[in-house]
Image (tube, rainbow, N blue to C red):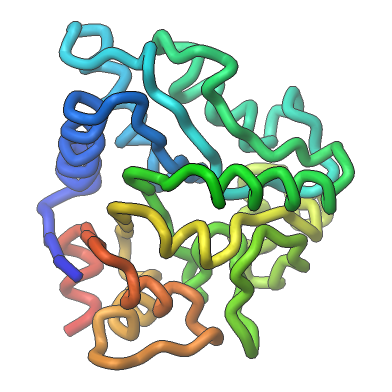
Length: 241
């Protein structure tokens, strides 16, 4: 596991983008694992800018998203499909048939089965992750066991509170989500975790601690990955001391 401390969120995003672009340029039909929320927005901005500058081409790129709120259609303004369209897909030349999304409005069991079948046949080349204050990755919340496959999850109160800013209040936040399980995440060729701000210090500190793997801290499973880079800003690094 490699740790990079940067001077700012913007620098973190640039470093992550360079890692993604190396894969896009050097691998035929790469499969990118995409997260949503505020963390990867800077990464997607960098990728968009470099596409417009002619540095990268998305015509052969494939993507798969980590998760989706249960009950939201792809056109809902807070769905992760809509998020990806706004921040990346509509701004580059990616082909619609190369985009793999969870349909929150469809039958959840069918979506889980389709996702797992796809992941059994396709390895994610590089995956970006954010991290919750409670250590969740994707919507894999703290639990007594790690769940390997794509599954429906009840969202923790802390996660609902954290996401309420996007919905205008906690009551509007969906209480369930569909998320890629740990097998898909840990099976990625490269994992890039971006975190910023002092609120993430406890979770990141435990992630970086030797031999600490516990399903109550979901991100700790990343220690078994082949290639993990954790990118944090100086504010978070200072809070960990």
